[in-house]
Length: 116
Image (tube, rainbow, N blue to C red; front, side):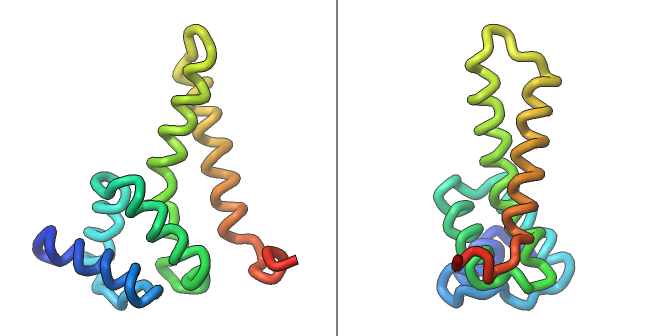
């Protein structure tokens, strides 16, 4: 992907086809970077949902899912930590670490157990 429009096109492809497109390693890296650093929260949630529902078996599924949800988890950890008078960086990191662990565990759950 050589431009931002290529990245946006890849995001649109995920959302419309409900599949992660076959991309070259550099293209996938650009997509992951965009999702982690630049995408809006709404786009992150939509892409994460597509990946979780339809592409968990894809070799890039976990990478793309994490690129979408980890920035959201960090924000949530900071908001939770703000409930404390003076949250330490350690407390924020511990909350973020817990969120990351839960997200990975959730993604790796057996698909059949989700339907029961």
